[in-house]
Structures are given as structure tokens and as C-alpha cells.
Amino acid sequence: MSEITGLIHNRFDSDNVVFTTTDQVINWGRKNSLWFMTFGLACCAIEMMATGASRYDTDRFGVMPRGTPRQSDLMIVAGTVTLKMATRIKRLYEQMAEPKYVISMGSCANNGGPYWRCGYHVLKGVDEVIPVDVYVPGCPPRPEALLQGIMKLQEKIQRDKVLRRKGETVGSLAGATLDGAKDGGR
Image (cartoon, rainbow, N blue to C red; front, side, top):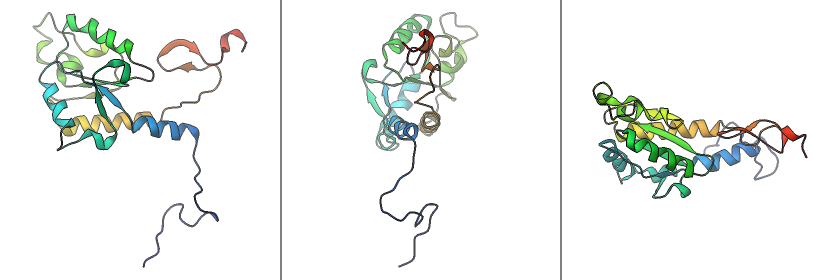
């Protein structure tokens, strides 16, 4: 049998020794357990559903669909966002628990698509209403493109700093601080 070689193989005397940081462990759990809210608005929703089906299978990435914003930490906005729907998207986004992430899927969600010039009712990109983490281009984008967008989001989550120094802001809450840094730590 051939000897297994690797970066850390045979470098430690005892078995089961792992060196890591708490940030890496927490981020590993976050990136491999993304639950997305099923929120399809137009033809891109068909491709989003195909991504969750057996051929592409988002479950192997730990990405599961949920029907409620209170159980979701990822919103995939797939399709044309009208001005009437924009207020509903913002309300659903605000109901999601922290940390929350957004993937904008398709040309219509990214910048209004083919309707932005003549359509008075179309929002010129969902990023005018909520912050977007990853943009997936295409009209409609293929399931492979959405999977790549999910993997890019997982890379972004892995680089996140969970345990911050005292006084830094918390998530998307502008002005909020950890451990009462503004009031002298009382």
C-alpha cells in the first residue's frame, strides 16, 4: 500500500489533532447550511427550481429551500421585480434573521433586464431596495450559473469575521456595536 502524503500528514505526534480558529468553524457551519427562501418572480424561477431538482441538486451544497423568511438566511431574487413587489421584497428581507444574504438572479433582478427602458413599472435592479451579495447574470441564467453564484457566496461567507474586536459593527446593523463599546463597556 502506498504512503499517503499531504500538507499536514504525519506532522503531529498524537491522533485527532486539528488546528483552526473559531471563525473558521462557525463559517464552515454557516456556508454549508444555507436555507434559501423560495422567491421566484418570473422565468428565472424555473431555472431556480431546476437547480434544486435531482440533476443539479442544491442539497449536496447544504442549500435547502424554505417557505418562510424567518427560517431562511438566503434570499434568491429570481426574475423581474416590479415597483409593487419591491416593498414586499424589503419586508421579507427585514423578517429574515441575521446573518442574511441575497443572490440576485437574472438580468431583470440585476438591472431591470429588457424592460428597464420602456417599462415604468420595473425596478432598475433589486439592489435599489436590499443589499445584494452575489449577482448571477443571464436571461435566464442556467442552473450551473446559479450553482456558481452559490459557491461564490459560500467563499464570501468563509472569509467573514464572526468574532470581531470590541467596537466594530455587527452584521448589517449600521451603528450597532458589540459589548456596549459606545457606553464605555458598562
